[in-house]
Image (tube, rainbow over all chains, first blue to last red; front, side, top):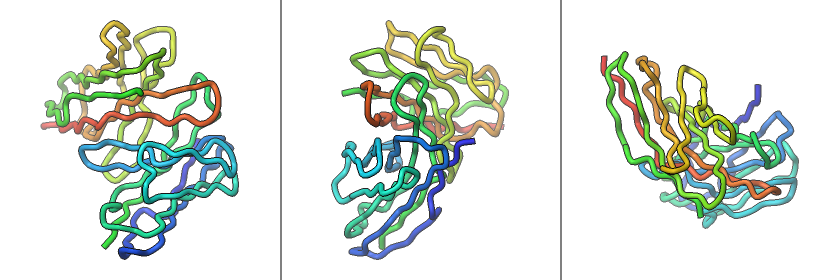
Length: 114
Length: 116
């Protein structure tokens, strides 16, 4: 089975801290994604990556950055955490684009910024 | 840009009754459509997907969905729900440009409540 693992289920951070959310996938997928999930808003794409060291902005990249130094690992970075970044963060991976490609999700990280 | 509308925020169904969750999409090309389910505190699990071919798609846990191009819809159905089906359901459309990474565009979700 495809496994996408997010390093933390729950995190509590202080305003202004630099926060790292880590994601690892074990299926040699080319594509990796970070989504943010908020009640009533569904999932919104923050950033995605289609190769090592490559990244593309999604719909809501402001206040975030990402890093992909190895194919299996995709990190989301909150440069200076703010309370409006309190949310559930979901990482996903998928094979290279084409028919039949679906995204596989991690279990999510619930981040609270106080 | 593509978009997905799930018009029902909450749906309450009695256990054993049939279920239909609505999904409408807007997309300029042939869509790739998905239904995901999310149990409380968990990630998303794929229920089913449509890429081409038969417009009635079977998925896991007894779910099915029908793609209707004329109505831009991809509604999810189940003939008889179980209490364990209580969850959040997301419809999504994928954009495939033939190269590079592509993200899914999700609807806002439908929260399914099962009454005993």
